[in-house]
Every structure is written in structure tokens, then in C-alpha cells.
Image (cartoon, rainbow over all chains, first blue to last red; front, side, top):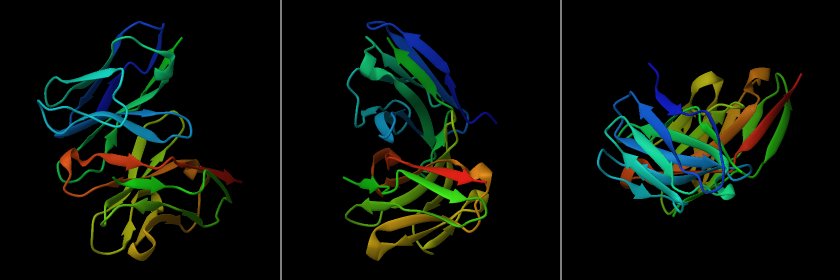
Length: 112
Length: 115
């Protein structure tokens, strides 16, 4: 039982490059989330998806886009990376009505 | 909107000593409350959660937390800390009956365990 799988684990981008962070869960969860974690700032919500076919902005959506491809997969895209997007990105999912998250192991992104 | 405060950025305890990590929340009613643990280089793992009912909840790895409505607190406790408990701990809240159960996280408390 893999839980939540994120790829890649590490990535270095140059300013202005684009990339997509992949996330897949195998627990049949309806809700999925993307957070970023920065030192001393906890986790901040970028985007979330309450169910397949829906996405909504979180606290810090600027510079990002998302796609809920199907119930399992929720991807995060950086169209033109900036140094301020250097962070650790976590994908999570939750069962409807439970709200306790299962997290992936994270993607450490550095933008130079 | 809800918010979470973890007053202690860093706590050091000796192995075998008791532990209490503080969490205070701000919300107009009783939110859903959670504690997560993050080991270095890892994702977060759910320790325990509170929705309603008994205010003392038990979690994994020997942790427990107590909800106190009068103090808007949800403190995490462990009677005897092990070296493997060294990690970062996050408190989180979810506003009930909201779309998709978005969590708001505190800034975290780093626990160091002395031998």
C-alpha cells in the first residue's frame, strides 16, 4: 500500500523554467492538497481539490497551477519558476469527512 | 478564518522525561484538531485527532492530547520521551462543515531529546 507518491523527490530549476510536480494516491480519497513548507513558516496551502473535477485556490496560489487528472492524481505546475518558489512541496490526501491527512514524502525544489 | 499558534519554537527534554507541546487555536466554534509529526527529510504523519466527545484522545507512538475549550488549547503529551521522538511537531485545525477539509497548520515545534 503506497499511500501518497510524489515525484520527483529533488529538482533544481533555473529561473523562468517550468516543471510539473506529480502526486498520486491509492487510497480512493476524494480530497487532495498541495502545500509548501518553508523554514519557520509551517505549511501553507497552495491549491486543493475537494473531488475529481474541482480545484480551488489556497493561501498562496500565485505562480502555480494545478490539474486534478482523475481521482488518483493531482499535479502542481510552475509555469515560470522564481527563486521565491524554492521550497519543499507536499501533496496530501484525505478521506471525505475525516480530514486527517496522509502526506507524500515531499519534493525539494531549488530555483536558481 | 481559523488560526493556530504553537508558542514554543524549540523544546529540549531528557530521554525518559515527560513532554508537553502547546497548541492554541482561534476559531469561532470548536474546530477539528490534529497533531502531526515530521522526521527530518520526511513527510508529516498523523499522530492523533479530535472531532468531538472525550476531550482526552490517544494517538500512535504513545502520544495523547487534551482538548480544553476554555483555553482554546489542544496540547500534546507523552509520559516518557524516547530518543526516536526527536522530530518536528505540527498542530493543525480544520473548520467543520467546510469545503474539502482544508487544514491550517501551526509553525511547528522542534523537539530535541538529550541522552
